[in-house]
Image (cartoon, rainbow, N blue to C red; front, side, top):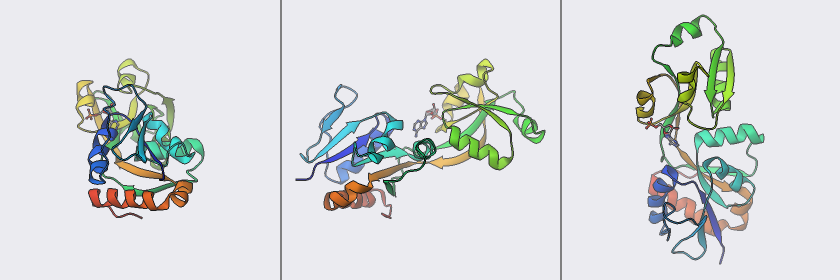
Length: 222
Ligand code: AMP
């Protein structure tokens, strides 16, 4: 029996991956919101789920701590920038879940268009420094980047930054903090990531799972 380890992060990715697992005949036997366990059993003795921080999913999969995982495109791009690429990581499927977008937002009273037009240096606070740097470089806008790990919405409100680059889904968080979305950088959804060595060593069960996920999402496995 080949053991398969799937890395997931709690919250939206975990919740939206459950129906895909179910479609593949896999039921997770514990609820991460009530259990403190980090390794969750499933109804299939050879498949287990490990709960890791969202930004750690690509790391676990790339270095073999998990055979496969589900991670947002945003996290994947930042991981590749930080770790100098994604050798050993295979991304066969866009699962089309946890959809959102990466956008630029500013205070409602900040004249973003003029700041950009006049070539001003923009102070940008974000967790997504690589995505933000590439975006503003392409626009020819000079930025001072402030790396944050939590609540970016606070940065323009406290004078820490002129703009933020953050994930937006409904837009409610921005609205509640009197921020407005001024540019949409890219659309985001979650990807299936697979360890390439595992794909060779555990080819049959991994291929079966990838095909089941592909069938459940209507995506085509690459
Ligand atoms: P919303 O108020 O629906 O626009 O959601 C925005 C907040 O939720 C921000 O704090 C985002 O960082 C976070 N968020 C939105 N979509 C996602 C996602 N797919 N994955 C992780 N965080 C998200």
